[in-house]
Length: 144
Image 1: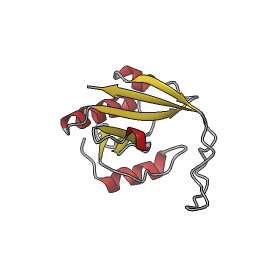
Image 2: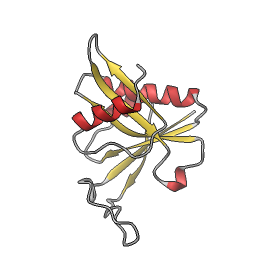
Image 3: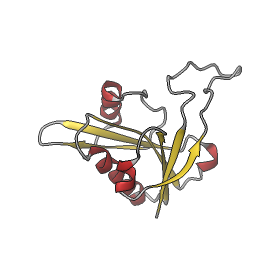
Image 4: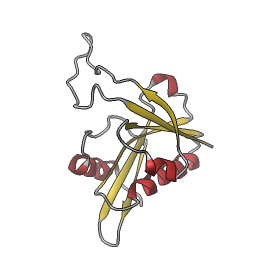
């Protein structure tokens, strides 16, 4: 279902277990049961500058209330929307202890295991700990 940025951000703030709302934004999609919103996905420019080629989108956040298959529906919807907008490649990241079953179910492939980051803080631009620094990550990709 279509969803506004503000509604997606509010949902992420309410239910996501280890991340806050993302900074960037290109579009969002939602999934609902008969009466309630049960999940959202947000997409934006790739955080990694090397991947930001104008044809790649990053799924920056997926949050659900635990509804069965909601994550797979959201990843699939993001890729279909991205392709309709002209993107030819998509990336997203999971923590290494997450299985990636929802991604594999809709055709994404595991592309890289990334070492833990020490954080985003630097002397020239101070940033606080987000609670996810020092975590091994997996990059997932899909291409047209």
